[in-house]
Amino acid sequence: MDLLLPRRLDKFLADARIGSRVHIEALAQAGAIRFNGVVERTLQRLVDPLRDAVDVHERRAIIRPPRVYALLNKPSGVVTTLSDPRGRPCIAACIPPEWHGRVGVVGRLDKPTTGALLVTDDGDLSHLLTDPAFHVWKRYLLTVRGELSDADPRLAELRAGVEIGGKKTRPGRCGVVSGSGRPGRGDARLSDVWLEISEGRFRQVRRMANLVKLRLTRLHRVAIGPLGLEGLETGKWRQLIPAEIEALYGAAGGRNAPSAGAKRALIRRLAA
Image (cartoon, rainbow, N blue to C red; front, side, top):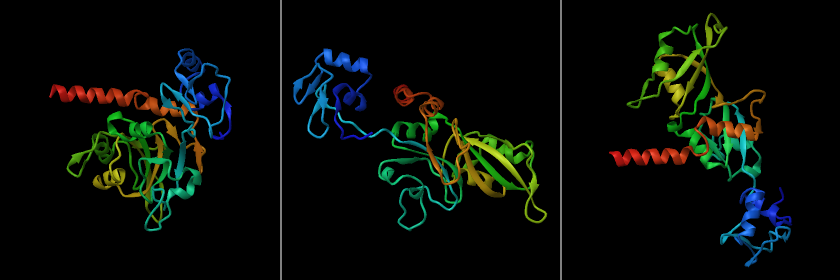
């Protein structure tokens, strides 16, 4: 979308996210739209974004770039920042330059960890996916030394939660990947374990594995909520389609979840 090209008033207001065409027509009939300070009911008028001012209910309507929703398959050896004062490789090299300074990364993966990262300028969605109160599961694949089974007591500890920094992690979900237990270097055996957690403390998965004495050799995030990496090569990104964006919101309880959560928190404070 070229933000500076002239367009009809109804198209301008739709691009400014004022509402649907039906809603915009109702605003015009109600006299809520002003064009250069004058009430305007003719939505066919041409608007030049460089010269004309359009106000709705006395608030300036501005066309903003479409939101960014992108999934990145992070490579190993890259830090999860858009710039690094120490000069280390960062994910800025993996995304378009025009996104720099505009988008944020949802959650983090440490330097050696690979896998799913969501990049967006939608602060509401970022909050829903990172706040543990909304219970959005993140799925990891751990490659560990030794041959494990689902009955291994160390996996039971991960499911129950382990204590990190004096606070127990939330219960997780995990199991051994079917067909796991393959030859490693020398006589060693390697197993693949999937783990799902609904929070994201600093280096949490690595610390959990270390606490239950799993010898981790590789860590890869497979999915964020319903969003997986299928078909996305390491170091590449792709834009999300609308259905995927709505699925992410749905995993956290819907677009109204933040306000509903705030109301519940207020009720708890009042009750206390």
